[in-house]
Length: 430
Image (cartoon, rainbow, N blue to C red; front, side, top):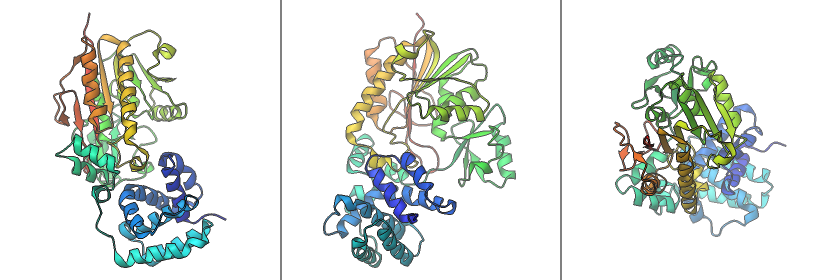
């Protein structure tokens, strides 16, 4: 017998707590439900992750003692119910009744009295005042403190932006349409949209829509890509005949943006370490009728994949904490640990050193992250420049981002782009 919606959601959240991302555990869970219930499951899982630390604080205060580990799924079931009571328009009697039924469906009938009592009291008393900044802003304590330290003037705004749902942003394929032409097509289709402020080919929709509603999407007219991520092509200074490397390329949005921006490139090589992610790049290239040379490899291990021909341009979008895209991936709040940051910084510096060795004299390297922590961003660049006398750090004269002295930092903006960092390095001619 199929599990009810809330029981499936509880199991997804338990999987996240045990280290799986929503991208990993949500798709098979969606397949357990009829199509009409799938959007609701997605909303429940994303919403509960977004407000997890506030909801978990409230639930902890309402339980006399934590549930035993074998019953942990019921803790998550109650979090889902609390999310609905606090943040949805679902009728409270339906939330309570269906949560009790879900408890039975999860083979925990002995806990139905506890679930019923806790949730009825929560409904009657309303939401308590958050106990601390972690509960108030619904982020882990370490992340709140690190943001407070990194951005003493902006930390609250960053936390608040992270709790907003991100807008849907498109990148117009310049080989097919101008941005104005595509805005007109959207208008004809009854889809409200406006041009992005910084990305020259970007369009932000007033409300998200399924991609099959977008004019000419299947034929490669547009791609879904945040405005901040689109800015990489404005920094690469692409010219005809260049050989370009997109290191750490999956899912391929930036690879495609590079090819759209300069159709006369000699070659674009796209590398990713994950064999499972390479097909995503292939799908995007095929839909957009573009070609790149794909390699499955660890970009830093150049001895195993590099053919000895230097690259004129390198985009190095390094693995990072992803703290600039939490609004799109709220499970990051549950998955990321403070202890992850130093090892990531080591990987980032190692990749930068490896890529520098295969950059041609006169070439340009763009270093990018979707992090808002200086430890992964301008401090990496400062360390690298200090260790390498031949590096020219390019001053970015742009109307976006905050000048860190070693690159520009975009903070997440509730009305537009994600959090992102960019630095540009050039290798002098001999």
